[in-house]
Length: 261
Image 1 (cartoon, helix red, strand yellow):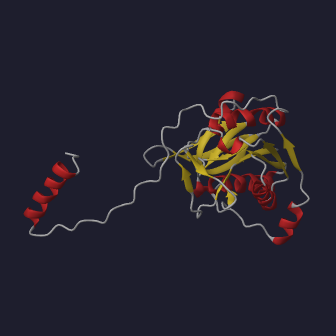
Image 2 (cartoon, rainbow, N blue to C red):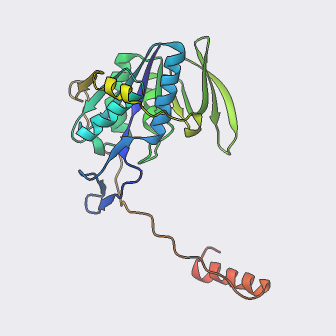
């Protein structure tokens, strides 16, 4: 069985990011530490567990600018248990939107013909949940999103998944398929030192969009109007007096100050 994991490299979740208001983008300079997207870690872990149970290989597929930090993250994915990686490199890919990223990844997915394409339920940085679904539609694979559990049975995937409202449903889909994972599906492993050393010798195939016959312009298929940090929360207000006075004051605040009523 061949499994392909769509790896996204994102800024460390603890990083203090800055914004370039003129360019309308986050500043991603040498001070930023890079990690495997936390949602992708669960997808990778599930692919590795499936390989351990059913055999085959796990391939990492990543698109980015080719920085040393990016390659270090790919090596960590290999240390977790993936067999090899395919790294599509272009200096502008870090700023590409979901559609451009899907356009770049698609030729490799078509070439590799995996039984399963794994991805996180969404990306940590932009959370648009777009790339795996776009790829599934383009290659005509069935897609299951937000998987909470996964089993293989007679060449089919048995998946429990979240649906709107917090309920769950159990579905069965034919392979090949695209599957995105919820973080509750598993607990990702930490690579051991011997696996980290072995990962240094695992192959990483480097490709460019040009070699794949892909034009990466435009990078964005939408217009950025503004990018900003959420406003800081103000302190709460304690209403005094008896219950009737508190209710009267609350209604006044909602009508006159907050203007929500």
